[in-house]
Length: 393
Image (cartoon, rainbow, N blue to C red):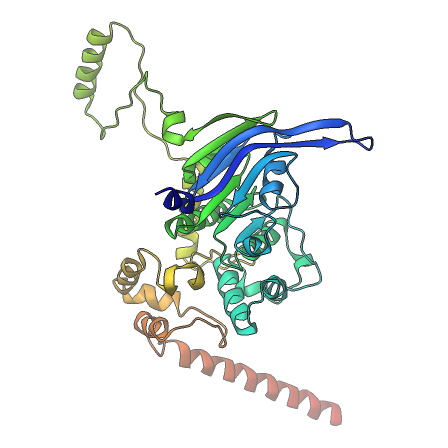
């Protein structure tokens, strides 16, 4: 039974401490002060705290980049300095340091080569990851031309090129637009469903609240609070009641009952509100449904196939296919076929069959458009010939 328990523990720290010393070996700062914690397989755990609280130092010890001054730490059942363990870890640092003269495709190929992936596998995973992070159209652009948000997306892709069992994300949504933030959060939840372990460090507490199972709050190198979100955030002294819109007379009766039972007016009735993120995403989704063009990043939405269990489609895919088939014919014609490079790996016969069902083989306006282009070309050629004749005269 104990062996089974150990197999379920992804990260374990006992009496972990890290003291930084000066040139004379005198203690300068105690970054991590005798902390104990464990993270189980399949958990999303947030490591929170103000700047200088010991988060980054703890992460560096998890990665084997720093040695503990005292105590012990194990990752996936072994020392984090074990090379074989490092192959099973994905890491997105707070700042993405990438080679600016490499293209997006070359960057992912480079990191894939570090894990001894075959050339065909590197190409397949790179194409899927670029599509997932919404940068497939910019795969041949140099990283130095990218904005901070676009570089952040490439950093996230390189952190997953090896399909890690433990993913450590330091400020994963830094520099991303709300659409990118939602996609990152959806991806993290998907990885949890696959049994992956994810550690998130972020100052954006709303993002943490959306996805994390448990949080650890550090201050002064010590863990000051830890537990599940429901345990830490539930206010047991108050109640919330949500109802459909009530008629004025019903509302008045409810207020009267509350006043008589509470013997005070310490309550309020208000309409629920959407978050700004929800409203923003609804506006963007509407624009995308209208096929409005943009030169910026696009919504990826499709998770890389190799990140899905056994290459199967993600949960809810059949429902999406059925919903697409149920769309009016005019809407399907307007959306048109999904453009992909001819050599895109991972394209299955099933995908192409579905695309044929969704889009007519010969759009109605295709031939007239060609005729119009041909007439314009002929007219330009005739005008050029006329000008040439006049010059020769």
